[in-house]
Image (tube, rainbow, N blue to C red; front, top):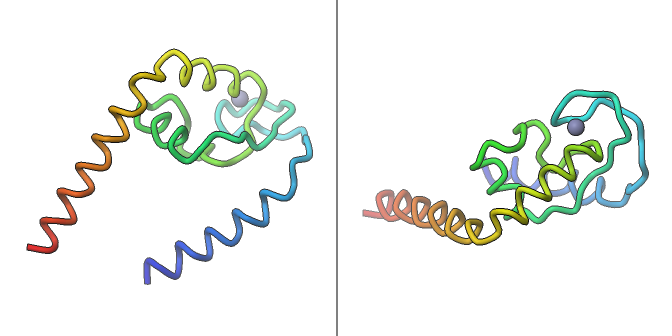
Length: 103
Ligand SMILES: [Zn+2]
């Protein structure tokens, strides 16, 4: 069941990737009407931004404005050394859950 949902999400994402055009719309992060663009943060970057509560969950892999992009990019640069640690934590908690399921 979950598998099906995931793959359909994956499909719609790959369609969106083709359009890199700039549009004026409400920023998915701060809500202001501005020039918004889908940003090329990696999945890991979005994950840590979410973990640190630096980004609105609704803005993940969605168009955001220039101001938000600069802010998030600065956060990623400032805390670059924390990214790996955060992701490791995330992964080990996931592994714990999985091993619990398997036992
Ligand atoms: Zn914004």
